[in-house]
Image 1 (tube, rainbow, N blue to C red):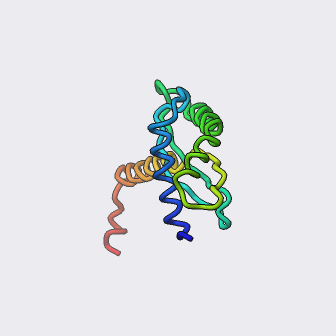
Image 2: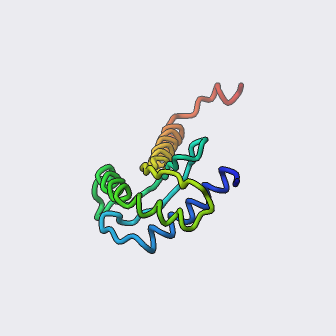
Image 3: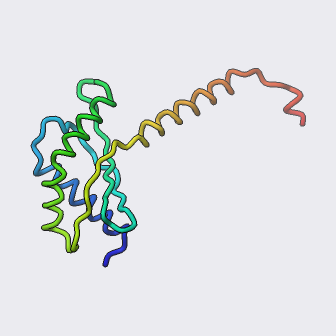
Amino acid sequence: MQRPERLEDQIHFLLSNLIQRELRDPELGFLTLTAVRLSPDRSVAKVYFTVLPANGGDQEAQDALTRKALGRAAGFLRSQLASRLKMRRVPELRFFPDGTLEEGNHMETLLAEIEKERAARPVDPEAEDA
C-alpha cells in the first residue's frame, strides 16, 4: 500500500494527462489541476482545479461550467485510473475550484496598499529619536 501523498501525486499526474490528452469537452477551457487530496480511507479524491475564464468572462461562471464538465467525465476518468493504478478500489472523484490563487492575489494587493499608505504617511521626527 502506497503512502497517501505519493498516491495523491500519482493520481494528480494521471488525471492531468488524461484531461489534457483524452477529454474533448469544449466547456473545459484552459484547465490546470492544482491538487488532489484523498480522504483517510482513500475512497474519495478531492481534485482541485483552476481555469482561465474565456474572453475575460466571469470566473465563477467558468468554474461552474468546468466543474459540471469534469463531473460528466468523472466516470471515464475513474475507469481510466483503474486501468493504470494498482488499487483494489479507485477513489470517487469530486472536483472543486481552487481559490488559493485569487486569495493570494488579494493578499498581495492588500499588502501593496498598506505599503503605499506607509510611504505616503509623513515621517514623525519624535518616533525616529526613540
